[in-house]
Image (cartoon, rainbow, N blue to C red; front, top):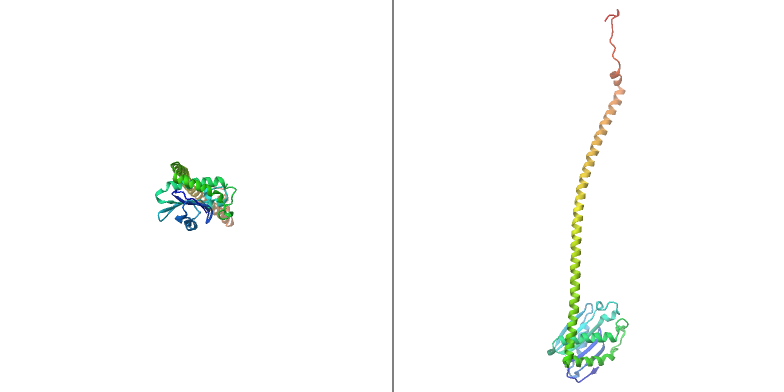
Length: 254
C-alpha cells in the first residue's frame, strides 16, 4: 500500500473490482482509514449505479459504484468497479466526488474497459496507477486549481445526468403522445366495432324476416300441393271440370 505524508484532506483512496482492491493510496497511515475499504466494499451492490457517502467519526467515505448498464459494449467486469475515497468531513462532498469522477476517467483511459477483464486481475493488479492516485489526491485536496477542477468535474457530471434525465423525460412525453394516439385509434376502432355490431344485428334481423317469409311461402305451396294430390285421389278435379249437360224430354221439345 502506497503512502504519503502530505496534509491533503483526502486521506485514502482506492479502486476495486467488487471486494478486490486493484490500486490504492493513503496520505495518512496514522489515520487508519485504509481499513475502511474492507468494511465498505462488501456492502456495495453493482446491480444499479450508486453514488453514496458513509460517515465514520470525523471522516466521510465517498464512493462511485458502476453497474454493467454504465458501460454498454464494454467487458462486463467494468460494471463491478468501485472508486472510493476517504476524506475529512470539513471538505464537504463536492471536491471528493469531483476527484472520484477524475480518477474514474483517468483509470479507464489507462485500462481500456473493452479489452480489460478486471475480474481476472489479482489484488493490486493495477498498482501502476498508485502514483496517479497520489498526485490527484494532493492536487485536488490542497490546491485551489485542483478543487476548482473537482467542482468542474462534478458540475459536468450533473449536466450529463441532467441531459440524460431530459432525454428520458422527452422519451416519456413522446411515449405519452404515442399512447394518446393509440387510445384515440382504439376509441375509433371501438366506435367502428359498435357500428359494425349494430349493422350486423340489423342485417341478421332482415335475413331472419326474409327466411320467415320464404318458409311461409314454402308452407303455402306445400299445402296447395297436398290439396291437389288429395283432390286427384278423390276425383275432385273431374267433378269440378266436367261439362254440365241438361236433359230434354223424349219428344224433343224443351
